[in-house]
Length: 203
Image (cartoon, rainbow, N blue to C red; front, side, top):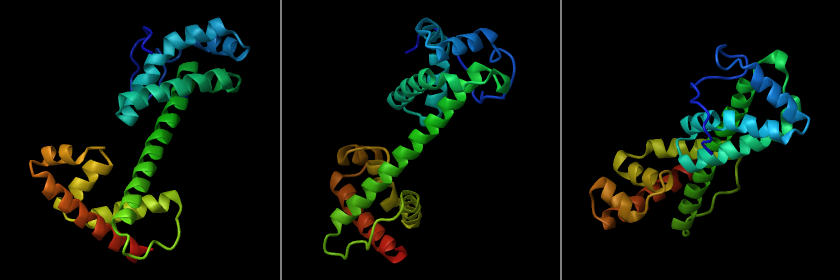
């Protein structure tokens, strides 16, 4: 993916700073790509894939996710190149704007997925309790989970965060917190039950 392009400074978006972002050659390549010129797109890819990757990494903070975002962005550039309007800003900034949006969407998607996983774990852990009446919208679900997490004390909250938001196993959580795995499991059970109670109260 790193095909020799230079580093991109954070914060470049369409209509942003002038300078090396204002490159008429890139504008011409993008216009040619809009006409189906694959060679022009290949040159554009060489010039912008690395800056897109750098921007994506700064947003998602995960190499694999950043690489996926970069591929998605470059495919989107190829498919939607005809939407580029030189009068509204440089090609580089237009592409980086797409990249920023894609990266932010990826962060939100990952956060929503983790919130759903944690909520599912609460339900699985507390089968003897009444189930939540009905599903709520993703954003509301996240808000409830995050609010309830914040109400836990640190010793109960931290193992849950490490397990469900950082993806650590019981053993890895135990190592990170320098405590026995049994203690980690016990605190996670307590934390999940308190999360259950909190979410039930807020539903």
